[in-house]
Image 1: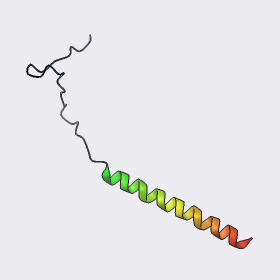
Image 2 (image 1 turned 30 degrees about the vertical axis):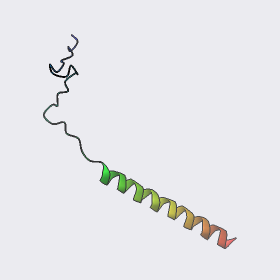
Image 3 (image 1 turned 90 degrees about the vertical axis):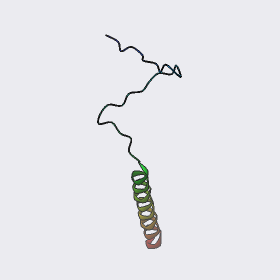
Image 4 (image 1 turned 180 degrees about the horizontal axis):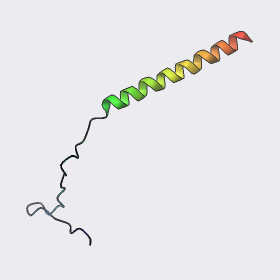
Length: 56
């Protein structure tokens, strides 16, 4: 059976209901960690490439 769309009486817009455990988390720390890890990988590749070029 399909869930009926419940609308707000004042605005006419569909109501959004949050269930008990759903909360929005900030992903700023995750983004910063991924950027730091990416920078580390890029620097490591550049250093290995420079070492490779210096030995030839």
